Amino acid sequence: MQLDHINIYTSDLAGTVGFFETVLGLKTGYRPPFTFAGAWMHGPADEPAIVHLVEDAAAGPGDTGPLDHVAFRDQDLDALTARLDQAGLRFEVRVIPRSGDRQVFFVAPFGLKIEVNFPPPT
Image (cartoon, rainbow, N blue to C red; front, side, top):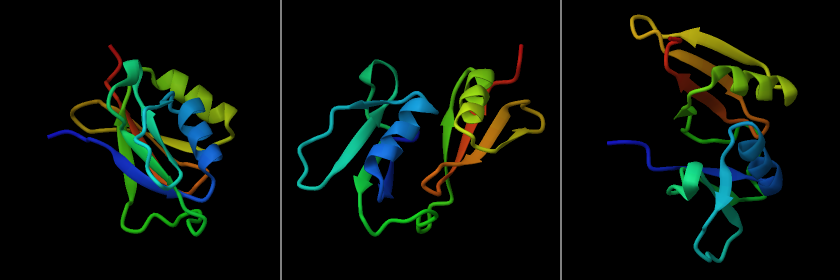
């Protein structure tokens, strides 16, 4: 089993799309013609959408219900931390015991805690 997608409600669709594009490097891609506003964020080569965004005027920062955080896997820790610095976002880097995987935790501008995992340095 693997992560298919996450769904996030946001009151700022354009800002949330911009965040996922600028900081995490995802791309807006195909989304079926639903009757409500939203966007689907895709990884490389227009892979299946991994983040579904739904615009909801009532959604506010931190209003993620039972969703604590969302985890991604990437390869270039330095590139991500540079983009987080550029975006003015505070983050914490941790190392997983035994595996040596590195984790970066931060809170997105719309209130969602995000974890990005990286393989140990070689």
